[in-house]
Every structure is written in C-alpha cells, then in structure tokens.
Picture 1 (cartoon, helix red, strand yellow):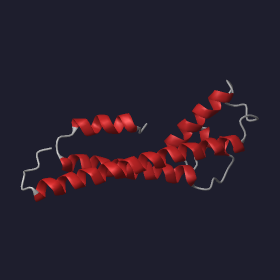
Picture 2: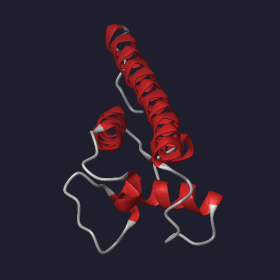
Picture 3: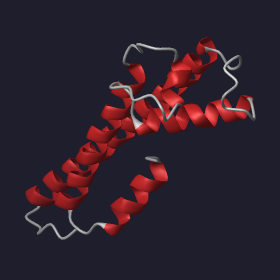
Length: 130
C-alpha cells in the first residue's frame, strides 16, 4: 500500500536527486492508476469487485483489497450481500480517492522542492551530491 511513510522511507534511502525524482514520478503514475481504477464507472454491483471467481476488466487489486477491508468492517460473512450496500461502498471509495489525491499533491510538492533545491545548488555553482 502506498502511503506517506512508504514514500518517506524510500526517499531517505535514495542518494541522488535523480533517483528521488524517478521514484516520485513512478509513484505518482501508480497513484494516478489507482485513482483512475476507483473512479471508473463500474459495470457491475460494487460487491462483485471483491469476488475472486469473477474477472472484471476494470478491477485492480487495490480496489479489491480496499473493498474487502470495508466489507469486513461491517460484516463477518463476506458472502452476505445485504450490507453494506453500494451507496456505502461508493461513499467509502470517494473518501479513499480523496486520500490518494492528497498524497498525489504531497508528491507534487516534494518534486517541486527537489527541483528548486537543484536549481538553487546549480545557480550557486555547487555540485549536486544529494
């Protein structure tokens, strides 16, 4: 799962700005893929996206895992299709998309910070060793 701690930990382990930018851009692409998966119009009932016996083209593992966590929060029997309904699941999906969008904005800020630092170092004539 992609979160701030995962990103922070990886950034601290990378040495150069190029590596950091590359990691951030790859992460940004991954986050946008997840957001797109969550926001695509669904062709079936949302609960069907959890099932392993149905292969859906517009499904992704992040959506499936997220929906499983939400359903297990409401019921101990994942096959019980009465509750939570589509409205609750859609609402939870919207909340999760907002979290991913916030993370996307944080990555943008980090990319801008690294680029500004590089410009500042280059304008001072220093060698970039970070």
